[in-house]
Image (cartoon, rainbow, N blue to C red; front, side):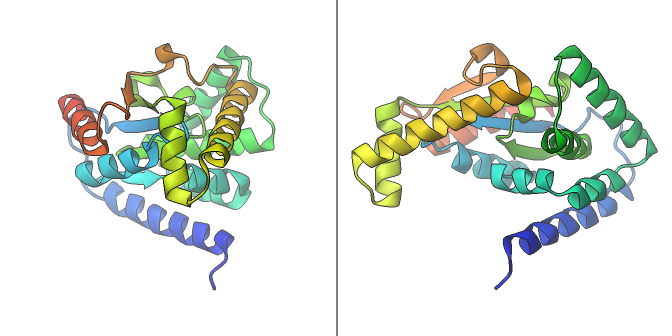
Length: 225
């Protein structure tokens, strides 16, 4: 059985190999590669929408759990930095320094690694990043910030169906996860995760199907690519 740490290491090694291969190709004289950041309410289907967008646009997909494990490892953080050229490293260092100063952040070891991991991924471009406050880290001009929401009762019903639990238990799970995500963004970025001004588009999946959501977002993204 492969351990979680080993599986993350494999993901990183494969991703770095892919980036190194792409870097050897001639750079197109077009717009910089876009990055999509996705913030979602628990049970809203944001993870599925992220996967759909990545598949349609052939973007790399980084789920919250993978980003979190990357940020916990100093070795992974170093590997991602080594995947950047000198110009990319200079940008990363300057951007993180300005971000910390501008937002009055006091980064602990985890946040330091998280900033490096997300900024390195963002610098390579053509990626979908789910959670971990990526929309508060990357330069706004280079990203499309999506927020996926739905009424709480709707999301609780989805969670109950998915995990085979009662509606009340599902509702408690939704509320707990909501609280944890809100606290994470407040602690590390001093921001309100639900504030609409922090996003370019907010989608309500109680009125749009997942397929409609993916198609709509991809149509908008293609206009910017």
